[in-house]
Image (cartoon, rainbow, N blue to C red; front, top):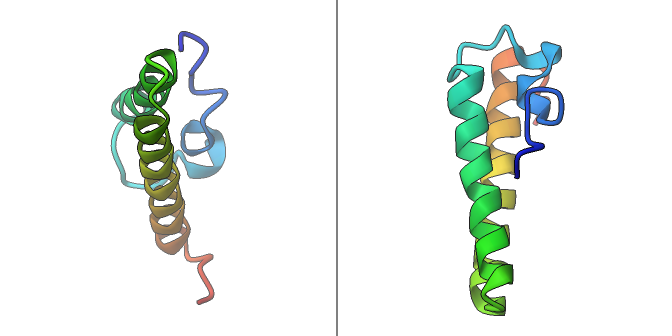
Length: 77
């Protein structure tokens, strides 16, 4: 979990820095918590919670990317 940083998270990279969203620190903390939820469920050997935590993280990631692309003007839906 300590390896999550600005360099690893797409939203924190330079391509998305200009978007008026949360600060990189707030964003990284939010994503770190999502990853911790996944890790904790796996560590507890709780497959249903792990599945739910992963689903939550992927849904949130998809939404964050959709909003970023929309704000950047690259969403052609």
